[in-house]
Every structure is written in C-alpha cells, then in structure tokens.
Image: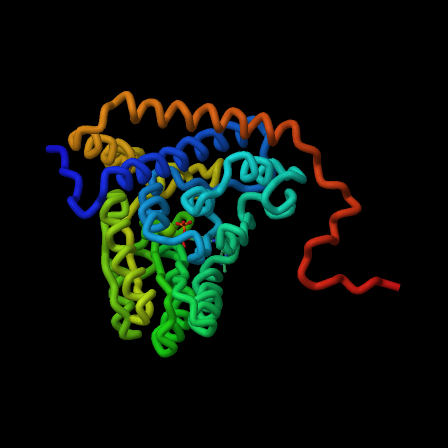
Length: 330
Ligand SMILES: Cc1ncc(C[n+]2csc(CCOP(=O)(O)OP(=O)(O)O)c2C)c(N)n1
Ligand SMILES: [Mg+2]
C-alpha cells in the first residue's frame, strides 16, 4: 500500500525533495557513464540509493547553515544547491570547476554554499564541523552545522571526540550517520557489535534518533527537529539514517563481499520510486514529475558539454589557492 504524505510536509517541499533526489540520482548515473568512458580521472564513490539522506537533511537547512561531506560527497553538494556545470567541470579536472579542477570528486568544496568540502579522510569532517558550529555559537549567529559520515566513520576516534566536545560545549552540531551497512568491503556486523549507531549518543548525553534513510520525508522531519533544537541553543544531535549503496564502494569495485540478491532487495526499496508513489497518491500529476526528470536530464547534458569544452588549469597555477605558501627551495 502506498504511504500517505505526512501532513507536516507541504506539497511544494515534497516536490523539492523529489527533485533533489532525482538531481542526485541522474548526476551520479551520468558520471558513472563518463567515468567508464575515461572522461573523469581519479576515483568515483557514488551515492546511488542513498539520495534521501542528503536531500531530506539539506531541505531542513538554511542556505547559511554549514555542511561537511565525505568521499561519497556529490549528493551532499547537490542537495545544498551545487550547480551541475561547476561540479561536472570539477570532476573533469577543468579550470571552470568549483575548485578550479584541483579538488575533483573527493575534495570538492563551495564556501559560498556553506559546503565545507568533501573529504577523503574517513571521519575527518565529523571533527571539522565542530569548528563551524563553534564559530556560529561564538559569533552569536543562529546557524547550525551538519556533518555527514558513514557507519565506518563512526568507529574513528574523531567521531567520539567530536560528539564529546559538541556535548560539553553545547554546540549547534548535527551528526548524520549514513549507515549503508558497509565500510568499503566490511559489513557492519564485522566492524562493530552494536546494531544501532545511534546508541553511541548516550555516552555523550546527546539526543539521537534512528530514521529510515530511504524515506526522504522521515529524514527531513528528523533533521528539522535537530535543527530546531540546535538553533535555539539546545545543542547537538546524532541522527542515524539506515540506507544502502547500490553500486560498489568505488566504480570498478568487484563487490565480492555481498550478494546480488541483497543488492536487488534494496533496489526494490528505491527512495525515489517510493517518494514518487507518495506524491502521485497525494494528487501530483505524473506529467509534472516527468517534466522535472526531463529538465534535469537537459541540464545535465548542458553541464557535460560545459565541462568538455572547458580549459585545463594552467601548470603555472599549480601553487595558487593553497593555504600554506610553499617555501621557495633555494
Ligand atoms: C582515515 C582513513 N582510513 C581509511 C580510509 C580508507 N577508506 C576509504 S572509504 C572507507 C570506508 C568508509 O566507510 P563508511 O564510513 O561507512 O562510508 P561509506 O563508504 O560506506 O559511505 C575507508 C576505510 C580513509 N580514506 N581514511
Ligand atoms: Mg558505510
């Protein structure tokens, strides 16, 4: 039976949630294809299947709220308002990209969107986000700061230190754990004994919640609650969103550690198909949803053309835009 749209979610918000998830899915499927054709250098970790987490969480934020991402970060930037053309150019390593082609997939950042960056160091963002939260608190701004991270990252020292510090300093930090059941090839049951990562919040006296990470409405509402608390001085929250990644840990991963049947079972729980049914049942015409999908495809085609036509960075710029000037070697 199709679920009904939660009465706390206005229809226009519900439509935006759908659009954001589709933007993420279609961007990812496009870059998967481009990567296979050798157009994108480096590694690619896709977010296919997990779209509801970034889309739901970021919809609960203001443009001036901070987020920080992971190695699987395209979805977070798109959900925070990232433009396809500038993202695509960055993944292509071109000068017109968000980081002038020097960041790529795993180090893409856009301060203007308060997106503090993807990060290849597992768990690093969980600690960094407290810095953003502390800034907001110190300056008396009612901004909140959200760190996305995985189940694997919840085993790092950074996770425990960050939750403790956010607790004792009462920071407006929101920790969103995307529990997709795997850290690279290691299933969750082999890397931690607990089933629910949310229980770790108890050790730091932080409120927590567990949400179905394939239910974009549930993620949105859970984040909204955490945001309301953090903005009003109520301190940090840990949200565990249970989800699943459909593709390999990285593009090219032979995936010997899981069965096809397991993947197929999760594909049946597609967060986008599920939300589409909710919207249709709430009276939104199919044609309206199809038009959104079509618009996204066209925008993506333009973004790929923009990236392909963009220049490479000039070697003379290699040392520009780095934080620590490299001392001249005599
Ligand atoms: C500090 C550190 N240790 C190990 C790695 C190698 N590594 C990259 S991704 C990953 C697994 C991360 O798992 P999880 O946090 O669950 O995120 P997911 O990939 O599932 O989104 C590991 C161990 C790394 N990049 N950084
Ligand atoms: Mg994981």
